[in-house]
Image (tube, rainbow, N blue to C red; front, side, top):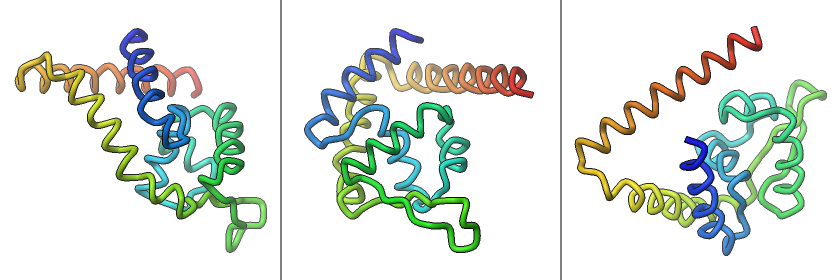
Length: 137
C-alpha cells in the first residue's frame, strides 16, 4: 500500500505542479471545494489529516494565494479557512488530473476487478481508521 501511495503522490505531483498545487494541499482543497469555510479542526477531522501537518500546509496555501483565513462570526478564537477565487478556479483542472491518474492506474483491471479492489481498499482504510481511533481513545 505504501508503494501505491508513493506512486500516486509522484504522479499527482507531476500533474498538479503546473497548477501550483502540491499533493499535500490536494486533500485540503478537495474538502474545501465540497464545504468551504471550515475551521482548522474541522478540516483535520473531515479530510482525515494530522493537526501537526495541516498547520504548515495551510500557511503555504495562504502564502500561495489558495486560501484566506477569516474570523469566525461568533467565536473569536477560531479562524475559518476559505478558498480564494484562484483556488476555486483550479477545481475542475485539478480533479480531472487526479481522476485521470486513478482511471489510468485502474485500467489494467477489469470492471469487476476494479470494483473488488476498491471495495477491499475501503475495508482496509476503515480498519486503519479504527486502529488509529483505538490508539487515540
